[in-house]
Length: 137
Image (tube, rainbow, N blue to C red; front, side):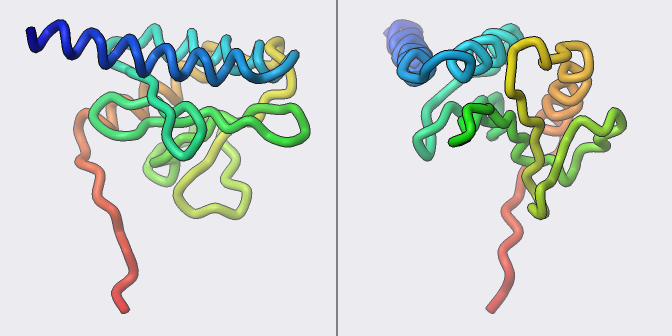
């Protein structure tokens, strides 16, 4: 029974993510779908709608897909400040924790470079507990 409930939960959250992506238009939809399919190939990574966008989880938030008003999609990594960013793919855009890569077309997606960042984010998620650092006041 528990396995059936878990299966139902995963299928409804996956459906919600795909429904969200299908609600978009044109190239933005195609970019989101390619990134969703790419991220979904990683074991135990699931997608849920949070803050009205698709978030990808394993133990904690890994990344999210953020459609932009200009038709692009930014793939944002929640703990980017803890990643090495050796390939220079991530742009912080004046943010201190979150960084991402912006795509205007599916042809811009370099899965090999992106895989390096995802692998590092997964390793971080597995080995370093996430803690919220809030200023004391």
